[in-house]
Image 1: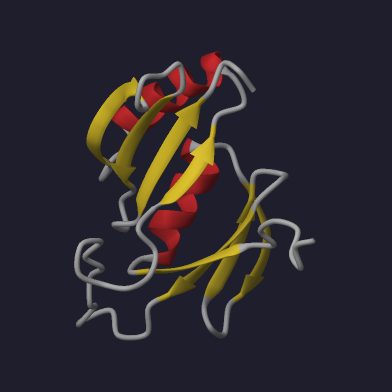
Image 2: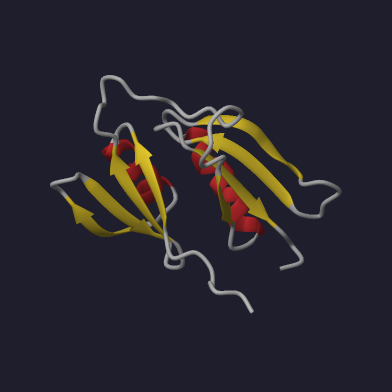
Length: 134
């Protein structure tokens, strides 16, 4: 028997809180569910997952994450609700200012699951996937 039951939330430190909040809220349609202005931090949710966004303390000298060298978050993977949503995500993120697509939708392994990878404007690496079997 496992001692845990899934993810409660994911916390991300970001260089520009407003920019990353806007990506989640305006681009992906998430909702702001809380704030801590004195930190500062903003909490966003898609109704299932809670992501806490924390403003990096030293904005002038951030240490960027290198997924091949650092211990920590490699990427955040988010599941699209259906194929139409997966396609809509691609359309929206492709047009969103500051987003860098690492790769466009492709099969994951032999498929049929598909995924794409990008960097949101604050530099967090995010994977979106769709599995027609689920």
